[in-house]
Amino acid sequence: MIVDFTGKQVHVIGLGAYGTGRAVARVLSARGAHVTVSDVKPAAALAGEIAALKGADVTIQVEHDAYRGIEEADLIVPSPGVPLDIPPLLRARSRGVPVVSEIEVAFWIAPCPIIAITGTKGKTTTTALIGDLLRDAGRNALVGGNIGRPLIALAETAQPDDLLVAEVSSFQLEGTDRFRPRVAVLLNLFPDHLDRHPTLDAYRAAKARVFANQTAEDSAVVNRDDPEAWQLRQLTRAGVMPYSTERPAPDGADLSDGWLRVRSERACPADAVRLPGPHNLGNVLAALAATHAAGASLGRAAETIAEFEGLEHRLETVATIGGVTFVNDSQATTPEAAIAALNAFEQRVVLIAGGRPKVHHFEQLAEVASRRRASLIVLGEAADEIAAAAEAAGVCDVTRAADLREAVQMAVERVEPGEIVLLSPACASFDMFENMAARGRAFKALARELSAQKGAS
Image (cartoon, rainbow, N blue to C red; front, side, top):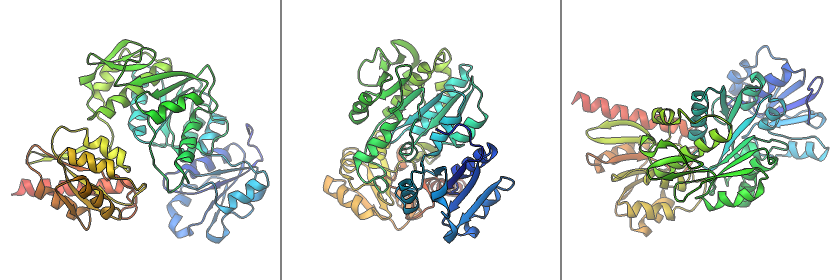
């Protein structure tokens, strides 16, 4: 583990829009490292990212010049979007150069404990709520990682009494070595990112690394209701705090007689939770357990939770037009996430789904849509695949749309007052949009257009 970076040759890979590579470059160059940043994109496409490094003592290599001299580095830090099996990394590893993720380096320099939240879905909501609970309990919580600022940027400015609250992904965890969160939270585990991880076992192993270096002094908050997540508790040496909405968890967090409880003590009435869906009750329980494990008071937890409205693109109510509620759940990029969204509402739903598939099993989503008597509008590369599963499951109203605008128009034709138009794609966005946020914003813009038309009529 490098503690003193003075004079070290550090090669950073990736200048992506999320800023991880830039943050690593700035922090380590300020600590005396000789930093080179490589990106295979042309300089013109990276103009904004390169400009953001102005003033930092950093060498930038782009296009065909990228990776020059990487085998001579003392340390390589790829951005999360960079697969660890690209040829330059394999060459460097064969010569003994360590390759680690940004969150690993953040752990090396952090002067305070880290709370790390991972899982297939629910990470961002849970991370944000933990930050709010800690701050309302009087702790200085710095929230980042895969949400907001990179963890290394937070670690650089943190003080010993702070707490770093980090959403961490499988991409970040697979590049860790000694990363040790004081509190690790595992929300759930189901197939995702199999376009990056070669197998489900590899994805599971990456997620499990959140527990790898924990000791008996640490805490692991684990979903008792998710069999895959619960099984991984065996891989930690930390004290396990289970949470459950389905069964008592006296040594963790549970739901009992209409109350969310931690270690059998009432923390918040369940009906104070404003986030829709039973899965979000689980996320709130996980946040309560993690906050308690971090040593913070839950005295104001009920007030904090009652004020927490959730985050953009996650079951976000966009508009109510003529009695019809439009909900943006663009973050739902797997069938399991779309199922949770469907089950969050008692009303009938017109579901807009499709995009670039990350997995190829839509049968369970189709069965839930059929049972809920949902109308289904499909689009994107997965449209035929989802439609075939839906028709086989007996969904009586399945329609294909050319694009999102047409999908929203079709939804309006099928929905009645009191019902929901739900964008919960069950797929990635990259066949039609830059990312899931762009897809969600497009849906919101279409809803605003409809609202304006309704107001003008």
